Length: 414
Image (cartoon, rainbow, N blue to C red; front, side, top):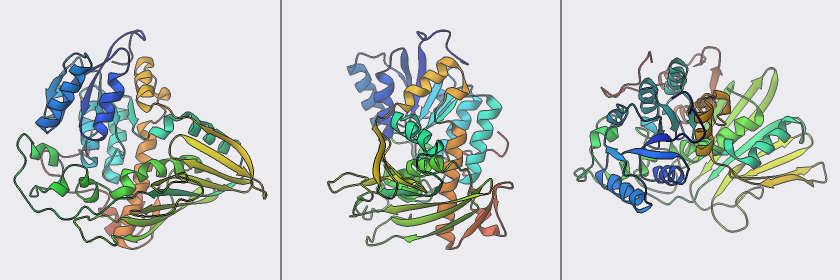
């Protein structure tokens, strides 16, 4: 559907990936008027049954169920697909959905590597679909107001931004290979990733900490704050990326760094600025008031300018301090609904109504991938946005993509 004939027309959604964040998709869409969850897709029969029971308990119509998204896409009456699967499947499932004529809401990060960032945008343009990225802050009322203040010069010339992702994550331990649990289609779950023996740590949620499927906490929680950092600075691609970090303290199965600092140098239209992003995995202090007073996670951003600074606490709150005396300036606390914005855009049929369009999500995801590559190679990357390559670094450019396991191949031509 290009747009609904009227605001009262029912939008039929297929939700793909039902555990974790997928549960949020079910909850949000089921509460919307004139939105029908027409299909549920998951490789695990147990979670499919659980979500169907939840919907029926709400008095909702029983949805069709599938293990394979490609079967759901054959339903011509489904208008849109909402994807909450692991990172390594996001791009391919989005491309399949666009090719089937569906609009898409895809969780962050939209890509598992830089090649996929390019291909997902190409597919959206070719098939003229509306695709929303799951960076929820883009629909936040307070943060959108904050960004306008930054554009209007409230804190002056912004020279630096700092993104924070301090999550109190304990060790995942070690889990041995074991038989695939009954009712789980492990081949579909692996998708583009290489065939490996099943272990608990490579499956539910902990897949984030393995390069085959995830991008570490930088690409899990951190991509939200990185997107805000780039949005606030008003930049696209960096000219230089450096990173240092490691897997500290815990002796476990995790491959990705649990402690990481990435720095970006931007030179947007001759204006230089800097971004610093930090990931911490365990007990930490708060910073600049982000996270409140009680011990716990610290997730947010600070922007530094010639006239003051602005702090964004999570996705719903900001405040400012102005001048040398750091006088309180504008502040606000109010969230938004990224899924509701997606549905509203489907009804209008207008790309410009999407507040978190895939083009923005793809750029932010690319910045995250560049940071991870710089960490893994242990050297600074000099990035050329015109050619979308790292200058003079064939090893880094090779890491822009992966070897895909057939038939789960992200195509060169969409």
